[in-house]
Length: 245
Image 1 (cartoon, rainbow, N blue to C red):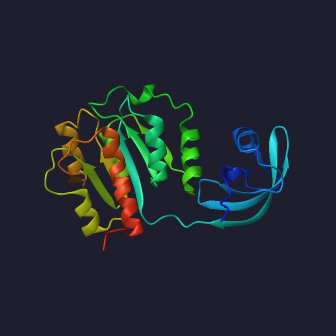
Image 2: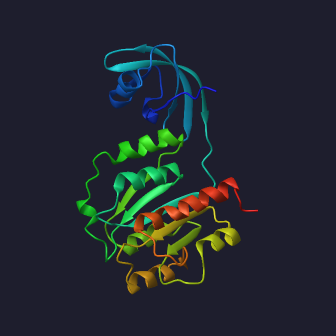
Image 3: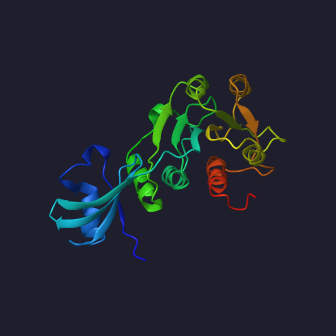
């Protein structure tokens, strides 16, 4: 069965005349060499998806005819992934995988032992990487990426209205993330991952006092990127029901 290629069109541009411009138009016409008459899929990153037919491929834009649209309901299971800033992390790889696994929001926060400063982060093409991952995985929801420059207090303030507050902490040895998911079946949740140097005691105490539950991913020492993606992968399995009966 033919699976039409997916492109991104911002929500403010979902109106007649429908047209792709700049990078998306270039990708359609010059990379994929799609011609008039072909069917394509568009997403707007806010749950809307549409099927279109290419009307005209011009030099700097592509005109489209709308066939039908659908709007996806917001997922019941949402993860706000709060990653302590790490200057050397594999940014593109991590962002792409997080979006493919359905992250709802990405928070990069300044921990006391973070390598580097969040204010010095270069965000060149971050959104482009996120959109590309959403297109590839056909994820209709593009997550917001937020920086918290003021440490754990800003993170705690953001978490106040979130149902489940989880802290992945290397010193926790008994309560596992897997068992928490099995027993609590949390829907909206914030999951905090510390920096490669670990959280300091004051940060852990502040998070626990704010209602965070300390959890472990198991006995192995995981790289920062692996620990960051583990709760997303587990959540995807729980949502699909694979192997969890």
